[in-house]
Image (tube, rainbow, N blue to C red; front, side, top):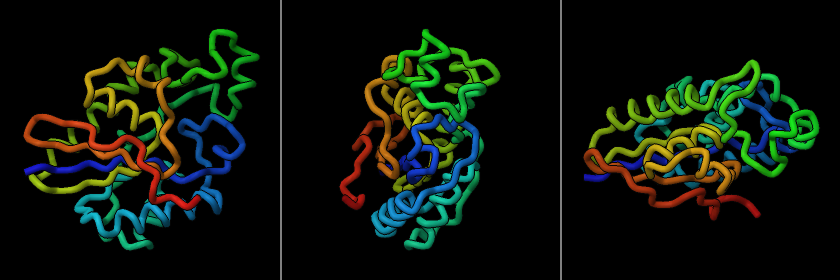
Amino acid sequence: MTARVLLVRHGETTWNRDGRIQGWADATLTETGREQARAVGEHLADAGIDRLVVSDLKRTLETAAELRAAGVAAEPERARAWRERDFGELQGLTRTAIASRHPEYHRDGSLLAVRSVEGGESLPAFETRVREGWEQLVDGLAASETAAVVTHGGPIRAALSAVTDRDLTSLAPEFSPSNCGVTEIAVEGTGCSVVDRDGTDHLPE
């Protein structure tokens, strides 16, 4: 039997709207973000969610609350492993500001691919944390069970890196998960495969 993991990025935050790097800093959802969260909640309410795993940061907890209000019955399980990467001194800055202060950071590149950040979390430490969270989740899934994980763009790409056995620094620049986009991964025995990446058909126009 095949189990499923649905990776859901949180709704739009005030810092997303302003183009600021969040990392571990807490920003709240905008009204648009709440609408997105309600929409994905309605989408998942009929998906038979058996487990609801949630990053322990404010924006994901707020998103999960909207999912529950929209009909997702599973009780939230907070998991620090699914936090965004800690971007240290870069948190709160825009990409333009970062590029002006740090010429090595390309304005249109992925900060996720940068190996070290002053005062933050190294890329290897981040990857290890998310992979351990992913393995713990998959190991605990029963056959035919469906888990939704409310998390962030970085961990979604790190999980895809683990599933597809691709280097995160090459995968990260390819796409940035949408707010409340859903990435579906099928789990069968010890094998995993990507069914859908960043689906957004359920979101309001």
